[in-house]
Length: 102
Image (cartoon, rainbow, N blue to C red):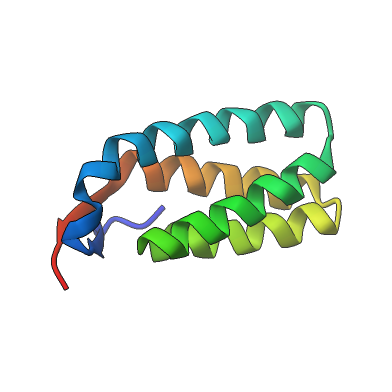
């Protein structure tokens, strides 16, 4: 994965929602892994779409980008592609740093 830090600039109005955002994102990541284990691509499509919308909506561009690729891989029923995106999502959530500003 990338050695450079992952920094996302988030509007200050969302600061109080960050704990819930990260908790929910980690819960969804667990659901994604379970769906992959079950080869449930429909659930992966839905969760990828959610990650895309939530990521972009909150200003987490990297998460939104991963969500797009996850959704596409799930639509293609590409198990390895989905696995790669879940690894990227895990890395992202473990390493992203939030800076608040406009």
